Image (tube, rainbow, N blue to C red; front, side, top):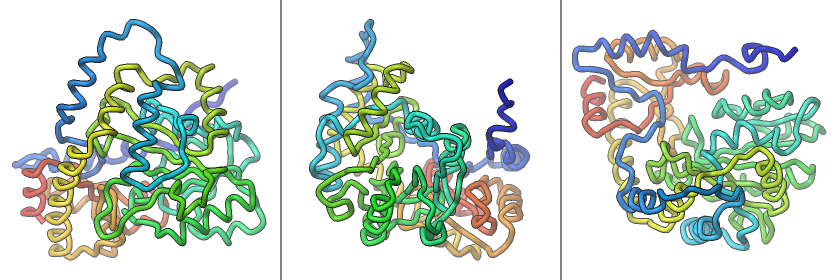
Length: 364
């Protein structure tokens, strides 16, 4: 008999925030929800028009994706992030990147007895995906601590969720070399790559990082944050063509296909830089306001060089901080959601309206 989900997977973290959310909502001026990175700004008009124009789609789309969509991803990575040597056979559209991240280990044949390494502070879905596959999970930032063991899969995330840390090129290059020496698949979650503030993020697919080949490497990209397309479920994976081919073969059998209208919309979104610069300006302004307010209220903001989060601490248990902020009508995420090393931090999202961010700053 199959084991129940409660035994196979960890509890869904955000269920633990229910009482604090209720307390924050009870504030006379309403809640300021800074707990999740859900976009709240409008979807760009150019993308909405593309979706509407492509809405007559009676047939089944192809799992591999439209050539125009894959070419748009290749062009975007080259234009915005200096990635070279990538062809159409190295790109595959996916139905939102959380779906891919949570099932990637299974799709690539990783299972019981295999080791999956995730960052010491990490998006919980990396570990969920490993657990679903029956693999072991090790949370490590230092690869030397693994000794002679050869992981089947290693996750990177830069800029990081939750810390906003941006990994420099020498560090990325060292991880690439380490994985290649051991035959470990390296997957980099780069959904915040457009949002570097104090540092410029670099893709693991950049030649300065991986040389003249993408062998053994995949990069995961989402349009949810850069284009406010979380509701469209648009993302793609890119890198080693042999790994992309393996994913394609599996996904054909499973019927995991990004809808045709979304593929058209994604191509248009990737080709348009103007709306991204406008969104960056919104987030930069909100970041400036919130960072100053947190520091003025006695917080220290660590890392946070990129992404859509501030990683703050008052050097106390994170749940104490969550409770105190909920009393002010501000909801944040406890750092413990992302690993034991986050026990004294909270994650503060920039994804709230200008009015709500100003309100939060005033309350702080």
